[in-house]
Length: 312
Image 1 (cartoon, rainbow, N blue to C red):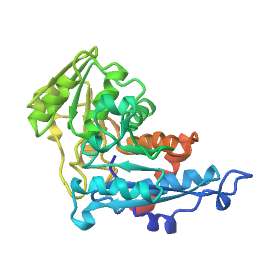
Image 2 (image 1 turned 90 degrees about the vertical axis):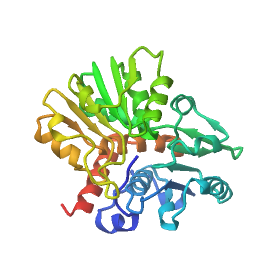
Image 3 (image 1 turned 135 degrees about the vertical axis):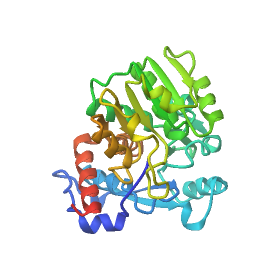
């Protein structure tokens, strides 16, 4: 889950969506939510949740908890969880680089989060327990199905074995990928993920050279921070991309990453990072509110927010 526009700026540049008839959000109790991560001061997530909640007659206050502002790290996570529980937070989203680090600090895990080994959504239940969920996997799968419903899953190369990569690998296996090659700068992490996924009906292996694997691949998924403002660049050489390859990006800051632009220029079918951003928010909204979000409306809001950010 990667993020973009600062919440207060979004509210002044994007026309509000009115609540559904008969719903008065001003009379509803406020639901307190938050996002823990680094470099998230311009996140789109608060606006997506707050605006969808208003359409359901709900009031949501979504707080950014950007550890980069205090040069803090994962050692702050236990204190943040305690503080969120004491302050009455209903739940938290978790993004880079804490999706794996937060797992051992939680009281329980939903089945998908336990299987994946990474958490992007935490719910504080009626007993005050912090329960971890993963909506990245279902969100990424929703994005791929909606944008490339006939994507060839014969042989997919996955770049990145961190929290987002683990979720996407799980989604690919659930979708029926035939062969999955995993590449990460940390070779041990790639091997660990490949071993974790063994026995689920696909050939899964860690590879040290993505270039070699891409020669016969039908799909490429990028799940590292490369391409974000603080991690500029492109994760693979453009000449390795070919028209027979579909490319899915997880980064959406910016939406048009160097990889997205290069893939389109080379004739690849492309799924940008916005699909995963919206997809994971759909799942998190269900968990936070117990309401069914409108997927088309949330995607539309996302596109408005990106346009406002980029001055379109």
